[in-house]
Image 1 (spheres, one colour):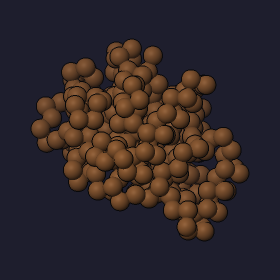
Image 2: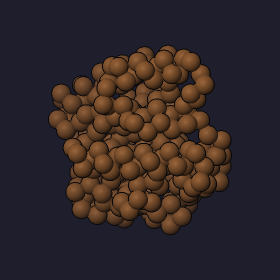
Image 3: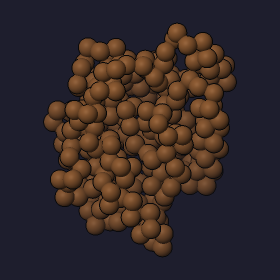
Image 4: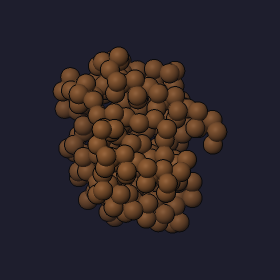
Length: 256
């Protein structure tokens, strides 16, 4: 049975997509069967997985509107070693089209049930806003992975996200919990980042992943080549950190 995780943070620009594609590639490298779902109309996670969003015949949009199954709409990213349920601009229209339909927040959950046995991990890249798309992701997930920079404003955004997760847990998905906080773009030379990192560990204890993703040029360059950093330059510090994170995720799931 697949473990389904949303990579979410209501603050933009914190590395959600970078985390999603690199964790997917890292998990694939350590022998896991992975499906990556792009729930952001910008389609960055699709492009960053070596899949051209403009060439897709079917996307997650078709799955949400029940005009295609996950098995029909997914594509294989051979370079990255995982399956992709991609997105493009069409997905922005799903918000409006789902307003009046039944079980609108459970559409993705129902669709994933059909392929549940085919994967070890399903990773969902969520948009930064709390929209119907994000809600579909949260309703089918076992947990949320929160990438965050160790900066003051990031702590404020985290409070909003925790409240959202509590609401979804109470009303729509009893399984939902925060799996862990991932410190990304971390520079140990900056005192403030060290202080915020210490605060996180103090407040959230074992919910903070041991792995820290460093600020790394190769990770930043990789999307322009349409690849995760783990595939683009496996020897870089950032890629190595994501592979370590993938191993930590596998261990954490075994302990759950």
